[in-house]
Figure (cartoon, rainbow, N blue to C red):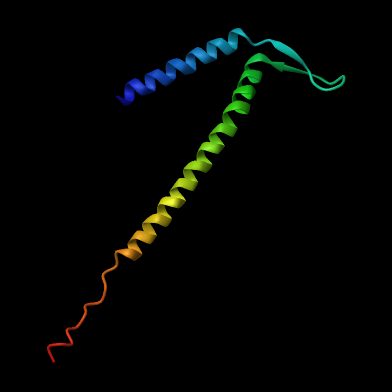
Length: 94
């Protein structure tokens, strides 16, 4: 199964390399005012992908971290509630 997974990622990587090599052209971006920048198409695509993916991933990781904190807090509360009580001595037998 690991071989198929590795083969899949190699195929995806090879396809991306071929796509990048075929589209290695300059694109002029007009920023603000008279500012322009020349950038290669694959670099622009990777930058835009990261610009969209990174905030979503960070929000996901923050929510996952918060859920783990809540779960650990709940487990600590449950551990305290389940601690065995000291045995009660029978005072009527004496």
